[in-house]
Image: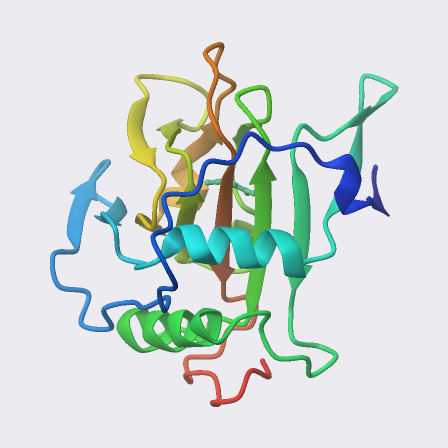
Length: 226
Ligand SMILES: O=C(O)CCC(=O)C(=O)O
């Protein structure tokens, strides 16, 4: 069972060191130039594109301020525990536009490039190295044959790890500072992923996850609604 409560921003403590020098407009390269595909096996792949989102520190700072962060709890072995990260979810169901225009630009670019209609955005805030997400596959595997899940990272770099479902050799990708990582093919079916805890001191990271929950190939309309 999962529960979910709103938390007060003043209660979130972050060791955030922005590398902002003056105002910068968040921007992406919709041509995806430099995108690299890593085949995990014959049918599963991960695409990466470092520093794809420009002014990602600004995006981190704006989203941290704008979004109503929530603390979910998970029940494990009959104990109710706080999930070790904060989250927010956007699905456009109330017709609200994305929190920042660049998120709409990303949805559109992603939808055109991967020929799927990306219609939800999940935000995960890892406050420090103690925050994490355990090995799992995304639930799109129950509804889609070959779901594509795209993650744009802001803030400090963390390891994003993948391993064959049920165990085996893992691979690690360092993600932070505007990096794009996309999982596709049979990745959600045959592989699991996680962001492990780390012992050393590290600043906060925010991941922004773009998903297509409907089986709809059309790109999203301009203006924010899913
Ligand atoms: O934060 C990340 O990069 C991964 C998050 C994730 O896998 C999830 O929320 O399902």
